[in-house]
Amino acid sequence: MSKLMLRRVSAAALATVGLGTAVATGGGAVASAQPAPPTSTTMTCSSANPLFWAPSFTWNVNAASGESLRPGGSGLEPAILLSGGNELPAPPGGLLPSIGINWYGTRVLVDWHNTTTGATGHSVSDEAALQQKPGIPINRTWTGTGTVDFTVTVQTGGGWWFVNPQNAVCKGTISVVPGR
Image 1 (cartoon, rainbow, N blue to C red):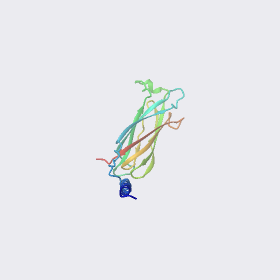
Image 2: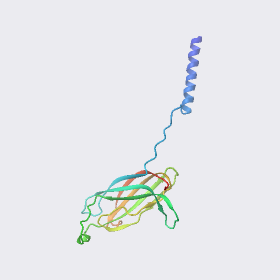
Image 3: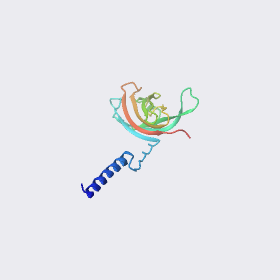
Image 4: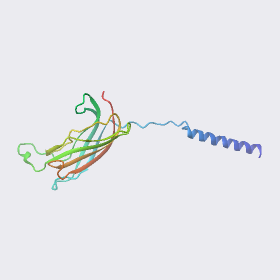
């Protein structure tokens, strides 16, 4: 083998070893951290109407990082707090409209996974009944702080949530942060 050929083989071997080392150690590339998800989000999800004579509609669900007191607890704890409404028409004002035929009941289920801590859970809201313009019932989902993936299922029924219930499902991710 000539000296020139030996140099080329040696240079190629060193380059291969150097490239392999650079790849194994990260190669000096700057790893960029993913930005944290927002602390609130608004989701929309459609639902069939539990009243056979009424059209389907869309729920608007707002999920935000907040704090809430656990039953029997002594302090506020990080939680996902829900609010929202829908596009159903509001009943007209006055005394007689309260005798309408469009009554709804609602309940909200939340399944969640805190990807920071690995914790998972399920929460069920208060139940609302006999509403002509239903909203999201009071719901507290204690997740701890971190990035939380969650699924909200809004169950809407005729008069009460369990009468011909129709489910609207929304999914989201937010950062649950400690209170200030």
